Image 1 (tube, rainbow, N blue to C red):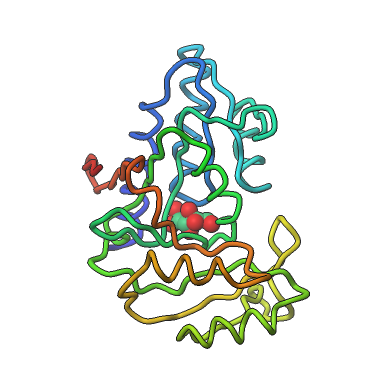
Image 2 (cartoon, rainbow, N blue to C red; image 1 turned 45 degrees about the horizontal axis):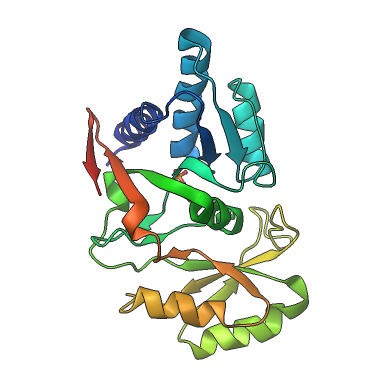
Length: 230
Ligand code: 5RP
């Protein structure tokens, strides 16, 4: 898919998801280029229709975008139960299991996903796969980065500490932690792998989302229009 087709697909998915948001809702706001289109459209609905909502951002980046689009913000402390969350994904399989975290925000994104009644995942078609096989990001406590990496390697990963674009130091998440990207190849049993990673002390959260399939709806943006899978 060329870049302009991909941008149009992301915009269509993001805009479509914003139509699912009703007046008075508390909305989890994911991080990434596709969900930012949802925020743009939500901002327009606030201005044009007087839609009254509040958003819980999953990163500083999401908070800055939401403010720019005029979306009032709140927190999980104020609203531990969310009506809906809108988020992107890096891969989606036919059972609606996800890999997330290219934007290093998956820890807060999983908290928001867990708190939400419904979760809309906005993607372009390139994200839809038969088998999850992208690297799985793991947010790691810096104190334990070597021990966690050894445990991840023992699970079959090839763990790589994520560095910034200039390769001059580790990416530090909004929570003050590191990201270790783990290539496992094709993941035969994503549910089990997520549980195994969760059992490692110092592995704070991984980008596999396998337990929310019942409440997830995937909006797949096309160059023209969208398709919806739930
Ligand atoms: C951030 C994420 C993003 O939602 C995911 O990387 C997709 O991003 P984009 O919509 O830019 O392709 O998980 O942690």
